[in-house]
Amino acid sequence: MSGSTSGTFDLTSFEPEVAEKGGPGAGLGRVRITKAFRGGLSGTSTVHMLSVADTAGAPAAYVAVERFEGELDGRAGSFVLQHSAPGSHGERLAIRVVEGTGSGELEGLSGTFAIHQSEDGAHSYVLEYTL
Image: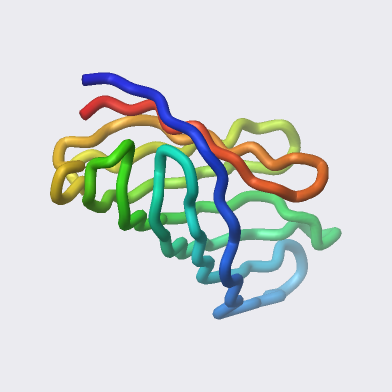
């Protein structure tokens, strides 16, 4: 079965764990983020993100894993998303469901995830999935 679902989410916490300015050049960071989802996804997630800032201190790239727990269109379970943003200069952010991580009624889930941020900072998402 294939489907598409959408909704909104809020960041409920943003906890920097490590900030390393390093030597000359890029700075490295690590952060833990929690989110609350509404819409087709109803539940919470925890994100563990590693990031790099360019020499001017602007975001340059990040990778992250995110565990979602709750419901997808009424089916209970959990799954993990993998984020990869190779840069902040026009490169495309890719987020996918890590196959083999679905549990409960979400076992076998695969798909792609898109995040949209409006000018006022609100976040929405679209999950294209196969189950």
